[in-house]
Length: 296
Ligand code: ADP
Ligand code: MG
Image (cartoon, rainbow, N blue to C red):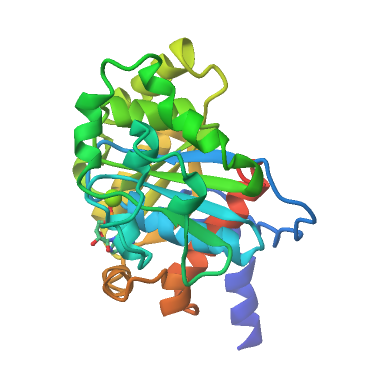
């Protein structure tokens, strides 16, 4: 009996396969980060994909909560007029100062726009439908692409990471988010049409680097809604890795109904179901980004 077990264990192919993660690379045990003894200035990460429903908001919420769980001070910016981030974190987005007010100058009180969330260390500046007008209203402003960067400069010293949750578009607001950022994180749903549009997104990031923000870098492509049981998911992930190589993060977010459930509860999955594999996946994402130098 024992001999048989050893036989199997000695088959190198099997052992190697078990050690590989879903992206086909060996699994890395990203270390738990050391606590920080001082805070700021923030590294700014924009979560961007002009396709809707790919996990930008879910990732902003849960990456933010994970980084906060590791003692990082995190500010999340709701940069979508739908206000899903504000709702998902349980903060009001009406009759409050929003990112729109700060950008248009109808309020200069950045501090007053910041809300604490139920996760200690994770704050948010909300947005609502007003923001949809900004795209047109900012067109004639001087340095219209740099307005968000200017707003964030006022609070950057107090935070370790600022996450910007973009709307699904490549318009002027997203250009503002990319101009303000040190890095971009691209969530990509493991679905057949996922790769459509990513070329355009990468082209946009290249243009921003050439014209507005020379330091911006691609922090990584995050595969989301991955279902290991379906050949389809595995094939899509394989194509993403073929196309983007090491830019694809090792951490992959599985598809689970816990996310919609947590949204209804207006809380990160880390608080809603901390032991769930999806919560651990987002903690791993935080460790991977810190390990890669993409977060403090
Ligand atoms: P985006 O901000 O890119 O539009 P969301 O984060 O709002 O995308 O996600 C779209 C929908 O998919 C939401 O209802 C969310 O709860 C759900 N969702 C996000 N990530 C997952 C996942 N890994 N598994 C299952 N559902 C998910
Ligand atoms: Mg969203």
